[in-house]
Length: 315
Image (cartoon, rainbow, N blue to C red; front, side, top):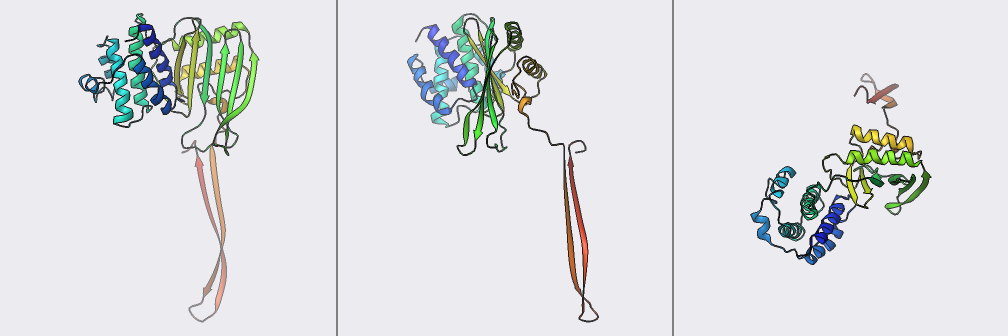
């Protein structure tokens, strides 16, 4: 088996990959088994059967999985479990590796591996150290809602401790069916304001927050780098209305004067909300009626009206 440093690097790298909502299934299927094999990990179906890590309870409740994990201190065994789980999902059950719970399963097991390799006993998901740079990627697409041509869908905002700020936005190209580069902004704020913002952001991510596994739409992704060049990654849903993240988004917008920033709450690019819809229908009906007494006809007209009102305030 490889040394602890190589295994720690492996675990750290794949935690970031599984956390990233933009990761492709093909990337995991091609590279994960190669790296497991190079580290000397093996595939043993009996390991999955005998342990509690893939039992029904552990696959339904991440807290049960964690309870099973803390009983394991053998790094090589964890590697075998990871490699065997990849085989189990990708080739035996044909279940997607990147469906939310499977991603969370891999992240949790890799986190235990990284913790054992680092010998620090620290939670590998909590930010530590002094922040140097933050990257916030926000995606405004909503599942089931069609995208408009030239609509700004995704943003990448980078804030460095020296006050340099850059924004790269991406727009939807209807003809191509994908995202193309859009506006680019580069500004500077004072170093003092930059350091204060980074401190507030890093303080939030030092908390023991729940891991949120998100899909490829309506998400935010944070990469927070410390002075030792260690990168900590977090993700969440754009419209989850968490007060702490809304306050952080507001502080960033107050300091960084770039219009329409999505950030954590998506409020920068929210389209104008429709509060009330009123539909009116009017038709004039003509009648041509035959008399029952004789064969004569007489004509008439009738106005027909319908009104439908949908109002958010009155439901």
